[in-house]
Image (cartoon, rainbow, N blue to C red):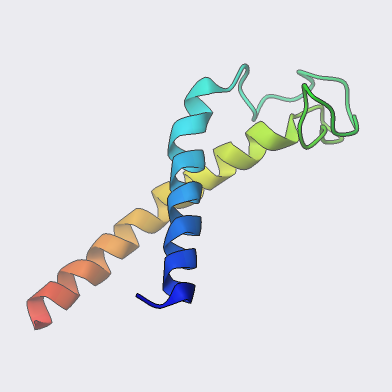
Length: 87
């Protein structure tokens, strides 16, 4: 298996784990404003800092990744089913 393909599959697996698994462990809803002080620098508690609206950057990223996976999955299923019908 080509090295680039292996790297891509590993990155995809990491994104899937982060996007699907981590939002369930979020200490608070990342879409709610003013849960933390705004514009904090990265720290042990806020890995990516906070936004101007007081949202934790790391948990917001995991939530956004999960939503993107939810949006892409139906398109992937359609493409896969068409590929199966052709072959």
